[in-house]
Length: 167
Image 1 (cartoon, one colour):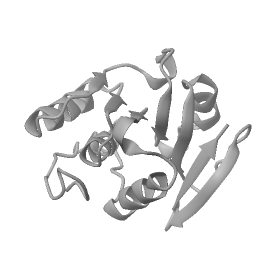
Image 2: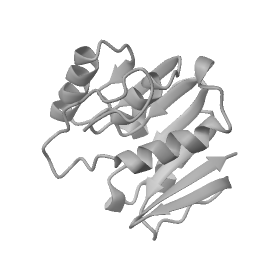
Image 3: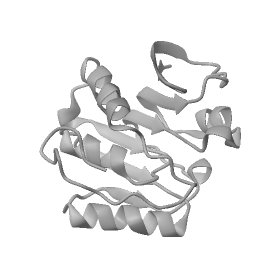
Image 4: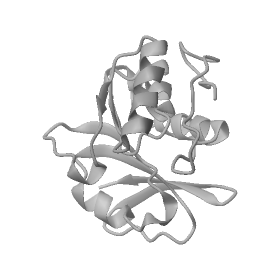
C-alpha cells in the first residue's frame, strides 16, 4: 500500500494480513483529504484516527502537512504493525494501543476519522464517546444511520460511503 500525496507520496507501508483490517482504498483516501483541504488548513491541524488498521490514514495526514496525528488501535499485533510503519517512515505520532471507546481526552481535534469494522454496530456509540472536533469523517456501509450531527458532505465509492460531519 502506498501513500498517495504529500512529502511521503509513493512510500510503501505494510498492511496487516488479517480479515480484521480493511485498508482504505487509495482513491477513497485521496477523496477524504481533497474534501478536508477545502475546509481545514492542515498546517496547524490535529488528526485522530480512531480505528488505526494499517495506520495509513494518519500517515497520509502527516504526509499532507497535519501538525499532530493520533492513531488508536486496540489489537496488539495490528498495533505493532502500525508502530513499525511509523518507525520505517520516521514519522512521529501519538500511537495508542487501546480500545477507541475507552479513549478520553480534553484535546480538540480538527479531524476525526472513523472506520470501524463495518458490521460491529458501534458507529453511534463511537460518536457519543469521541472527543471534540471540527470535522468528523466516517467510512461506512450504506445501512448505517448517523444521528445528532450535521452532514457536511457524502460521497459514495462502491459499497462504501464517506460522510463528513460537523456538530
